[in-house]
Image (cartoon, rainbow, N blue to C red):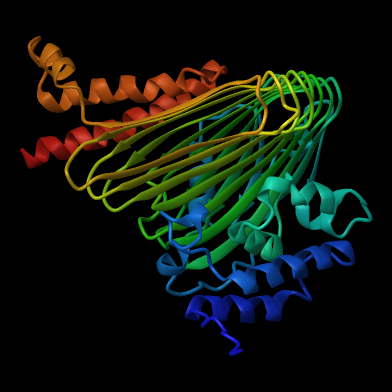
Amino acid sequence: MAIVTPLKTAAEQVLAQQFANVKAELPGAGPVRKLREDAFAGFEAKGLPHRRLEAWRYTDLRMMLREAKPLAGGNAATQAVRDRLSTLKLDGLRLVLIDGAFNAELSGLDALPDGVTVHALADALVSPREDLTRILSGPGVAEGDTGLMLNTALMRDGVLVEIAEGTELAAPIAIISLASGDEEQAIFSRSVVLAGKGVKGSIVEISENAGSKAAQINTAIVFEAGDESEIQHIRLVTRQPAETVQVLSLLATVGAHAKFDSFALICNAGTVRQQHFVRYAGEHTEVGLRGVNLLGGQEHSDVTLVVDHEVPNGTSRELFKSIIGGEGTGVFQGKVIVRQHAQKTDGSMKSNALLLNDGATMFNKPELEIFADDVVCGHGATVAQIDGEQLFYLMARGLPRPQAEALVLQAFAGEAVEFVADEALRELIMGEVEGWLANREHAAGKAA
């Protein structure tokens, strides 16, 4: 039998060479090094994810990455980075990553809240901590994802945040990841949040580019939320050059009687693939995954999630809103798994999209995989245009069409944003939404 050897793309060949060049100097020895080598072996066997893989059917990374950019290696705080940090309006602890590397100088380590410890992930990777590889691996449903494998192999730094049992955070902890944008480069980082039993608080992730050069970004964040914890995760991905390509993974394991809510806003972010892998590790737990995607030009946003109900009495809610104009493309792939013994599971999954013109595209693929017989699960997906009756109502009261459209779209996005419990964070998100709508309204006014 002839042996078929798949041809590697130029980007795959460069990635293999990069890993060979840097693997000896990447932080971590022993189990961590084995974790990296196993992950890269898995990546090499499969290559960059492509449309023939069902999970990546609508986001062909092999086609999108014609070339692999040089690996980022520093964390120098340019003036543009400092300027951007100075304009961020966000209270609470700031942990700053520049080009994927933790920058202690710009982080607020001298004002850590009680019960919170922070380490650079690069330091944690070389520590003797025995549970680190298990934590980094995340839920089992994430195994085999080649985007995540590449992150595991090449992650250089990030932050490890530990929040002690019973801690209630008065203000959010913000992980601010800025690409310096001075040159094109590839950024690989991973952060970990370990929240003990009964912890209550918010973790905010901000991903932006302070410069003008596009980056290839592959980041992951791992949550382990203890029993009776209440964690709110907010992700804002914006201010990126249009050529930026990002793979953002969320890995969450949630304990019993806990609540874990995640919300993501994507706007002006180039090409983005968000993938969520969530595992229930205890009964009577609620998980909410929500988000808003604002797309224009040739932007592409893929939301793919796998929610694994391993235990009974779990509740999951997913709601994603997409507003797509220009030649933008939205993707929603949601999969809820209910194991055989996960009785009394309550799941609901929705994706709603508004297409603003003929060139915009939306793909929806919600999926339920149910092996238990006493559950309540459902899903729904809609793709529509702006409601003509709503527009007529507003325009009949004297509003010009662009302004009327902005109000309708703001209300549409707001239906997902309203689930963010923290009022200040809700205002921050709506500020970004309103800014995007104002730019669109201005562009429409100029075109007229």
